[in-house]
Amino acid sequence: MYAMVLNKLKAPLEWTELEDRDPGPGELRIKVGACGVCRTDLHVVDGELAEPHVPIVPGHEIVGRVDALGRGVEGLELGERIGIPWLGHTCGVCPYCLMQRENLCDRPLFTGYTRDGGYATAALADARFAFPLGERGSDESLAPLLCAGIIGWRSLTIAGNANRLGLYGFGAAAHILAQAARWQGRTVFAFTRPGDAATQRFAMALGAAWAGDSGQAPPEPLDAAIIFAPVGALVPLALKAVRKGGRVVCAGIHMSDIPAMPYRVLWEERELVSVANLTRQDGLDFLRQAPQMGIATRITRYPLRQANEALADLKAGRFEGAAVLIP
Ligand SMILES: [Zn+2]
Ligand SMILES: [Zn+2]
Image (cartoon, rainbow, N blue to C red):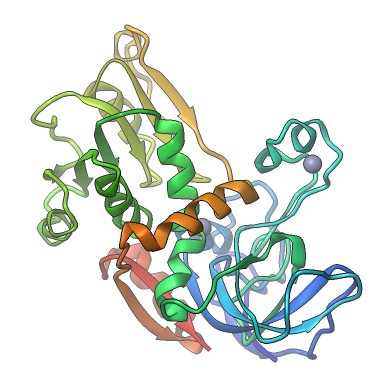
């Protein structure tokens, strides 16, 4: 097998031939058809997460086919199309696992961060964390649903029953979530980097009622806002944009520092929460409904070997929607 391997933090990934790996008990091997590029992958490469771990194969939006099954795996067939998400393993016995909050597991493994992921021609995965995807849609169009879609969905659920919804940072997650929120009948307000007219047009084309710069006030107060951009300075801006009792959800795994802000920005029962990871139930809920939502992902394809270019383009905001690697 071949993979783009991160051998050193903050260094380019390296195209590497690796021994073929056999799935252990409870594992499967997936022949990768497509792997989405997530902003979290940039944080992994840049060593911005709590447990930097190299060498590692990044990538946690994997779509492909079951290629080999380890001992004891049931309910999946060779050749079946599946998706592998960020949550790669949970312990099942810690307090969080026992209270149905496995996204907060004390001893988890994360695909493409603490276990090898999908920037590769093949990957191993804990079979209990694989989602059957059926045959509808192409591998590359489905890949961004595996993280941008599922974690966006969890964020939307945590945003609550908010009709006027603000999305800060209109990248892979927001472009999927805007479509899901519109399908639910919500009104979407999109906030982009200042002056990013192209992304604002993209948001409007996906059904946003308004799109503007992140520093701007929306035309009416928001009921909730979700921040996808890894920019702590957006927190006070979003809190100012929501009404009394409104909620601001930080959806990313990493953010720059949140600047000091006057207490009155939070006053009047505004809430600030973060979303961490996903549960398998989030994935099942979202992937079951995604076909009815009519979500069309905007993707830019890169050959697997050009993973570094894809990451650089993501960092620079050079495409709309999501990048997907094709082995
Ligand atoms: Zn656990
Ligand atoms: Zn992700």
